[in-house]
Image 1 (cartoon, helix red, strand yellow):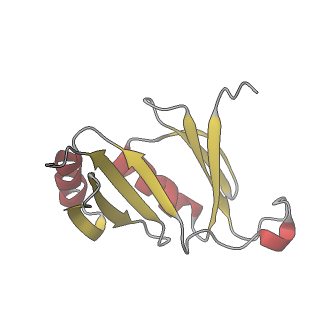
Image 2 (cartoon, rainbow, N blue to C red):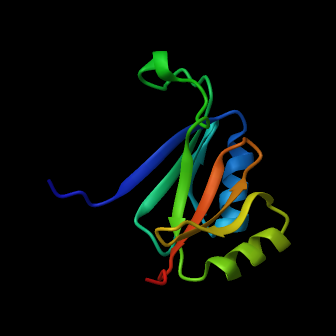
Image 3 (cartoon, rainbow, N blue to C red):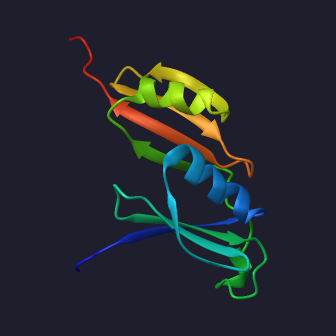
Length: 129
């Protein structure tokens, strides 16, 4: 299998709100959009984010067409977690978890977008022996 690109598609109540959050705080750019749909790309990644309006008749399979969110984390590994946290917080994103470090070396912070999706930044740090 040769995977050339990856996309994550999420159903949300307000497509424009999550797309705007991704653009404003995470540097995504709209690649294409239509009524109830937006596909975003990031200049530094081969992963697209797609937001679909909850309840679109074109969503298949229809029996799982509910909203994304509960139990879902959008996770992005970055080089400067503390700098990115400060920038995003200062720009007005809702902080869910300020930076903290797990015993295994995962430093992370979390923000919530207007649809309640959790956006997590991670930086792997060396832990003392």
